Image (tube, rainbow, N blue to C red; front, side):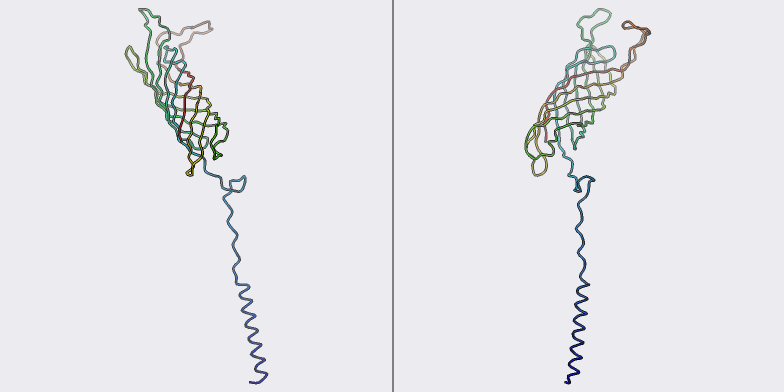
Amino acid sequence: MSLARLAAAALLLSTGTAAAQAYVATGVPTPMPMPMPMDDGRDGYARPPAPRRIEARAGMLLGGSDVGDADGFSLGVTTGIGYRIGDLTVRGRFDHYRVGDSSDEGSGEQMVRRGRGTRIGGALRYSFANTGESDRHGSGMGVDFWGEVGAGIEHVSWRQGGVLDRPSGEFALGFELDGYGRRRADGSRRHGGYFMAFRTFLGQGPEMDGPATCGGPCSRATKPSRVDASMFFELGFHWGR
């Protein structure tokens, strides 16, 4: 083979190798950037799910019941169960308490009225201030301040005979002490503690017969209000997980 042919073959070989290197250099795909975590608008990281737990409650009611013109000292019991997500709790309630007049004095014209009230309802609670123990994994103690609104059905049964069924609204303000255990792998933890609250039941009383009167010094006589407000001091224990 002549020298000229060897030079031409070497030139062709070097040209093809350079072209292949150029293709390899430009054909490598550019790595894609890693996806960023979901942003909640504050710190650039996904927000953890709200803590959840089941709550049971049992306690006593101490205050005054109001059913029409029969009102007086009342003592009763209260129970409930709820499901909490973050600061919101949906609860079912059952209450049983005394209704009627306070005085033991009666006359032939008006006897002392006695009875029992039973109330079944639901409520929505919001925790507006707490120690934030839901963010911790160890055991400890916490304090929770909350407000609650709800509705239900009240059934009044009189000892001398007769019943009264009516819708009932409620609102309450309270606080609780909460002892909680170490958080488990599934996110649950046991808890228990003590609670106190001021609670009001609202219902429409039966229409009273008779003319407008003055129950005390007044500038204008009126009929008694048909809004019955039973007010209770509530205290007891809660537990759950």
